Length: 306
Image 1 (cartoon, one colour):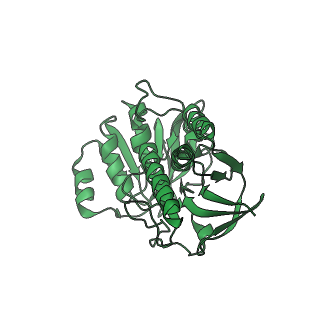
Image 2 (image 1 turned 60 degrees about the vertical axis):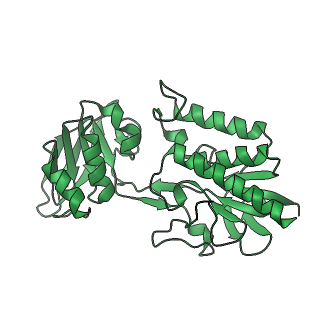
Image 3 (image 1 turned 45 degrees about the vertical axis):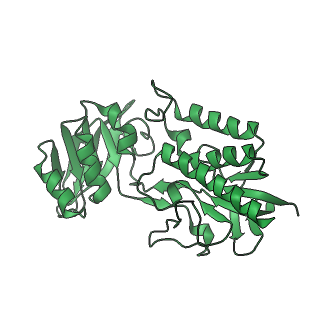
């Protein structure tokens, strides 16, 4: 079996950027992606905060441009499902639906997936009023009525952030108390543009070409009422796609991979980048930065093996 220099697991912005930097440095690079290169960029209708695009850019357009750049420098992209990995040896083994591969280094960039509500209308209106990222999509809802689903730090902080664009924010929370840090709660309670529906869940999202209203059910009384909104931000957490690692790489209690500033994990020759890494901000630009650092660290590791 040919031993590659680097295998990158995951084809989102972190993985694709790692492929650009690695291949450009003449590192023999294989990127493995289970669906299509681009990650969440492929389902982002419009991206407005990526540098270099003052008028914004369609998510799939940006994804394909980054993929083309990686392939132009010589990175190989394989569409395959990861079945198992063995990252503990000097040579790293990756078993996929398309066969087994080995490399001197592995860059883990599997990403994280927003948790969904699982209610009717959610998938139908994704990108047409349903969003999972306030910092990504908030500016598109200037002057609109919004619902935010969740009660943790992210949901409450992002509700406050959304008041930059909307003066009508309704937090829908299934409990009778928020889970966010007390200081964040205090800021939300003091904001005249935020109201909270306690003990409530969203049962259905309605609309025609875009979101028009949500059905909200009180979990204590079972009463259902419709709430007129133009957008629904589902902010109930993310799940890193790291189960396939089977505990080989050190993670936090939520499954996010722990790294140092050079993207090194606890295993020699294994690096991590992007949304699956424990970090403060999960955006395309930070994922790209992670990928560049991980590739540079992998290149240095390979040089030191000689």
